[in-house]
Image (cartoon, rainbow, N blue to C red; front, top):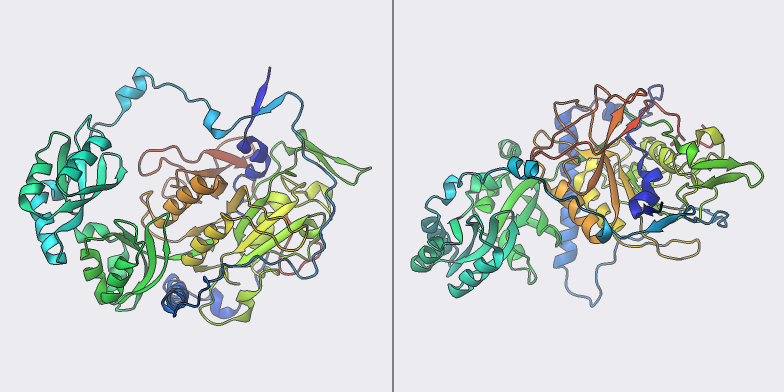
Length: 543
């Protein structure tokens, strides 16, 4: 009987690194006393300072006089002295396997049980009850004959029907989320009334400013400091019109992310109100900070059944990830450790950690003082050069891509994490055979801190957009808050979200588990074990 081997199947051994959240209870981090003594507020302040500095640099580059050259992208670098090894194991699928694209994955039909469980349409939001009047006022305040707003489709209506209706009255549908449609709507009361009364329309309205501001951000406004934020727009900004409008409100505006329609920006605390009142703004949320999650690691999960060590060849054979370029977004990588650097065709990396306090150590990519990135990479792809029984899940990986997203203290602005996602989406080369390769499987055992997660934050939407556009597998962990909360990345629809299980197969008591805020299954897979041994960072050559 023929079996199907998809990209996920090829990469499953890599992905089943499972929880990939390393904890080495006995290790002691040699961090400055000032780092270990910081409370949450101080850590947030340092991350905000780093975000503000990076946004300022991006803004300056955008506003600089044109030179005829685009701003150079972040370049991949190879470890100093790295010597690529010849490929000794060519990946071949086992006999009887066939390949299929994601388009060929079978979909099960909906049953009557599924249909019965489908949610009934939600009540009309209060701001849509008499939304036509608010839209007219909004357009007048903006000095335009139109403004941005929302249209809710009636049950059974489709987007094409609405497009025709809006076009007939001088409007335009811009995008759809369920039965809500982002739109450019006329300011004329008669036209708005005609749209609102159409059979395909359940309601129209403008999102209130207080709904646009993410929970928790308003509290940050009270200390009067500048706020590094993500500003999501109602439409794209091809000519920079909305960027200039934000600057007019006092914002320093960085780079635009077209996949999310979002600007990274720094705004004075007093500008939060005016920014949220702008009709072209959909949402405002704090950039926040990222830090590694350190509680759990994995043991082998049946890996020996699909690959084994050949003493004559002095390497593993079988299914061990040889055909898959892997990526790790973490604290850096210790390339002095043989398990990491030996028998690789290429190792490329880039640093996205912005230092808030000017420490030179924060700019070192290939040492990993915090240890976490090396530990995770070893679980994922350690080749067992020091001890073959300590090899990682995919020891035959030939190509590794590394993005350093935190400083030496294991934290950083989440803005760097976002920029690292863009870097991973593009093939990179550095030394070796010079062939650009894109990571097909990316592990991110770091999370964005925050108290409020509803499944549609910038981080989750960034994962969803990147995975969809770049066709990558993004592996993240659920977190360690049991049923109380989950990781900030765990709500992403396109992430392979992984939880922890005990050796008996039961969910670990601390492992975060769902459902998500909108009722989706979480985690999607679990991995066994705690406290696994893996290569050490910090320049270690054999521990």
